[in-house]
Length: 400
Image (tube, rainbow, N blue to C red; front, side, top):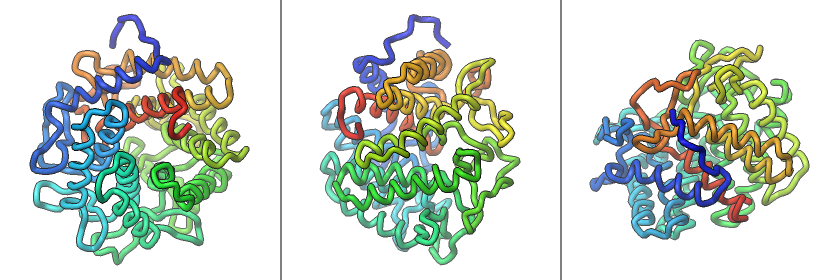
């Protein structure tokens, strides 16, 4: 926690500087000359696991460095984008045609095909294509085709979650998380290629979850579903802190869906986008904001009680981006106030002012919990991504 004067969180200079500070945290140790990036960082920036490579981290680093190149124009970031994309092809791509979930050195620890992971392959390829990396567009198209063939369920208008390594067995679990990130990826694919099929699919899947399925959950997006896409209210009920499939309503996912609706609306305006985005964000802030200690909690149950009151960095970051978009879209000063109070709390409790970057998680009270700043799947994609998204709105760039 810091008591230093607060910066101007609305200033582009601050946002650029904050991104550069986060990049500087990773830069000394992130690049693996043998391929890809080291992914597991302690608070001080040292690497605590040099072997494990998770698909989500591998792809998010590509997103990070493509955006870093677009911000700074520094060639090394474009080189690192290409470096990361090559690793996806040489180490994550399986002979069956999917991208492996996790490997450790030469050993495949988890060979499943996960829709969540493939969404991030599309996202990485889309951003790599924007900085003219060879092979990026081909990767995007191949992964899109794979998703359509192996995960998309036309009868339900949504994507299934996982297949085994042979691709023969489709798991019965259905979830919103993979679909939400697929929407994110398809928006990026549209912005990169201009192909309207990506935008149309993003819009239809977004409506499926935020309108059709949300109707049975008091207008909110529930996390888990059965094979027939009915709500599964019991799945992981004993795991409200699960990394990818937590039980409960997730404020971070409600606001993230709201952000995606606003992004879609910049390309394909429809009245329902703003109406639903406002509802999702307002409900998340009303039910998820901790009135005693500040910050958005990780999850709450259908009865409104906190299921996990710890504070995660990505939840605050996604809310920051969405609050600014809502302020810009509506002109309502209340959303600017939300933006500032989210930044204020995060700056005081989650930003590591000694070492750089953000702590992944703090206690309900905002106290330090663990030294693992970047375990599997994190790598500050949410925090830098939020800053880049706010900048795109301020500067009237892509996605605004």
